[in-house]
Length: 122
Image (cartoon, rainbow, N blue to C red; front, side):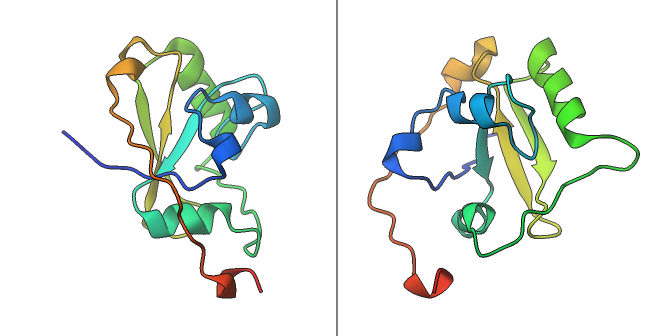
C-alpha cells in the first residue's frame, strides 16, 4: 500500500536520519532511539509541532508508548509504524525507522517554503 505522509519542520531538522529524536526523545521514543516522525496530513503535522498546544503524553492502555516503540525500533520489526495522534483523536502519525533495511525504499519528497499562518502563534 502506498501512503503519503508529511513532516513540517525547519530546514535544520529536515534530514531523515532520526538524529533529533535520538538526542531528545519524543512522545514515541526515548533518547538513544532514532526515529522519524511523520503525520497522515499536513494539518496534523502542523498541529503536532505547534507550541501553542500542550504536549499530551500519548499512552496506550496498560503500556508505555515509548517502551512499545523502542522495542519496535530495536527489533527492526518494520520500517514504518502507525501510531495514534495525541493531538487529534482518530488521526494517525507514522514513525519511520531509519535503521530498518527497508527504510531506503521509502520515497521521501522534500518540500520547501511551508508558510505557517501567523494566527497559529500569536
